[in-house]
Image 1 (tube, rainbow, N blue to C red):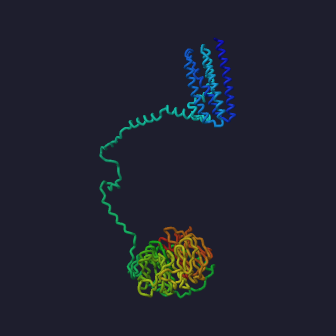
Image 2 (cartoon, one colour):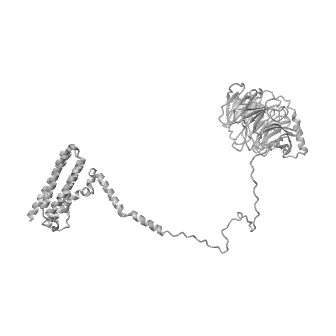
Image 3 (cartoon, helix red, strand yellow):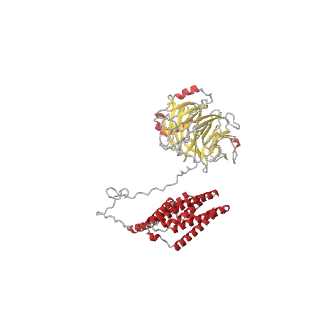
Length: 627
């Protein structure tokens, strides 16, 4: 029996290497006919699967014996199944041209599988050692390719690479692992437990205080006196009325001072003083310009002191004028709330020299002394009225009234102050003749400007006047104004923002100075009024005054028409004078000047400068001899 077993082992060992040699030859042939390695591995694995039943080493020898008929029947069935699978796989993979080669490979595989099956049937496990050796041999052959042979569904992934099959295997194992954990069922059970364990919402009962007093509260909010006595009911607040200042009644208004008694002898003397100024100055104002050197020397002698700082009005100053008197220093200002203030700097104490009147209900934006009669002062307001203050009669006479419009500025078209040109905030212009009865206009015309801020007449050719608006400065001819829309003769378009003012030079009118919100002062050459006026100089100057300060307006010095006076935002506070070339000539300042003087005016013949701020104060610079 031992010899026959050894012979069987030798025969088995001889046939197994021979089968592998045949398989490699078949694989070489298949590779030669361009078959992929996938088909080769499938054929070899299929042949090795049939030895799996012999790896059961735990069974006894009598159990390893299988009836010949049953083993043959099972082997035939398995071989038939494998053949059909191999055919299907080969038909799906091998192209039509390689059918002959694949049929040869299939026949070789069938022969090898039948030979192995025959040898396995001839072996009879008569000894336990032989069966154990056989099972060990088979298990060792299976362990070499366990990763590939034991993959479930191998035929379904026969066309995939080993890496992809390994990946699919890992995915399936991970899915089985997570399914074994039963996380969804655990989560459902936990959710049910949480819902069941939620305690019912119980309202907490507040403990009752023994003395019956709740939380402390402010006695002020309870409107109770600290002693416990209830306070009286608060008075009902007054109903707010729209901020609309009613217009003053039409017609003349009496000169009634707001800060002085009308029946006092001092007020009557004040009116007589102003009435005595009716005669214009006999001093020749047409003399030539002084040199810049002498002009600077005179400016250096102008100083300010506490005695020359006056509180005149309650609101910001919008306009200012200096009386041309040679003997007395008289200053007039127009304020925001319709006030007109008159100040006599020669009166002592200085509080007795200030008189405030109320001829308008809205800001007074323009103020002039009459060139024909210096005892008359004309004031224009936003409320649509233009009045003339006559000190000899102590009344404010109404010159022009238009309740449908708001006035912005005016100037005299005639030297005798009989005709006026009035600018409106809506861009219209009015010609007013004081010699005709009534308070209406002679001609109302519309301009090409959206707004008109200032109006100024040429000092020599009085038919021309210049207007400053939003972004344009226009020069018009009063003889060519029509009722529909008047076209300007010249337009100055160098400005980029809104323009606060535009004025001709006071003696010849050969220059025009404009103040623009782009922080520039521009000086133009208007010696020849033609189709275009050239720009001479641009002076960089901070004109951004903000919301609470009156806007700057650069004014010419009547004594030196090549120099302009303008306020400044610089520190320390100052008032500056520039030459038409752009050079700074002088800066007025001092310890008494602590605010911004937005509106300034120069005396026509004397070296006196008055500046008004946004709190109703005036600051006067003058020579020490004049003080």
